[in-house]
Image 1 (cartoon, rainbow, N blue to C red):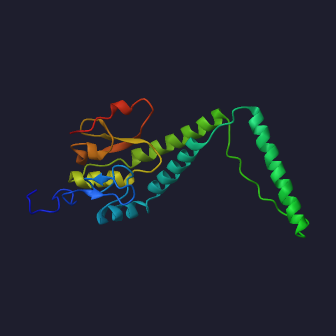
Image 2 (image 1 turned 180 degrees about the horizontal axis):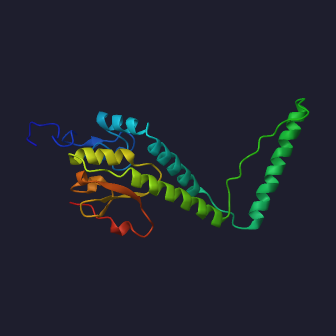
Image 3 (image 1 turned 120 degrees about the horizontal axis):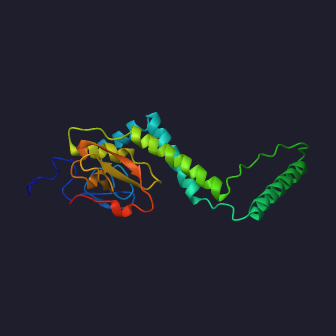
Length: 206
């Protein structure tokens, strides 16, 4: 870029970068590298178009479910399960008495869906959601594109929140923190779920 140029010919962003309005991170590309917020009009349109796709909708919903499961604590013992059951019965009893005081003889007390489960059950549910996300990401793999910027934006628009991901490129089959860390994202690639032990495998091109 010359001194008189303000915008990059490749990515269309201003010379000084783009500051994310959500997390205030300075970025070189159309999506925030920290929180994934679309930063340009083209990026925002791309996200809105993706929201209409069934696979993307399923991806976002499943990622949200997995995030909620990761926040849950399993039952530490059978006593915890019994205590929760006792609390549910007490809640129903209190609501019943309050309704009867208001002149409702046979009130319908809504059930509260129990979310806590054993460690084995919780791990099983996490595994099921993880497998679903992996299948969707495989289907939504970035194809070969005419330019790095289009491939980069396409992949970043797909990235769901709440899941730790890395991007595996088709060029070297290397694992990057995102397509922004790949020198040739236009050759295609895909997002993969980042495990606990493979963070050291991430290699971003300089």
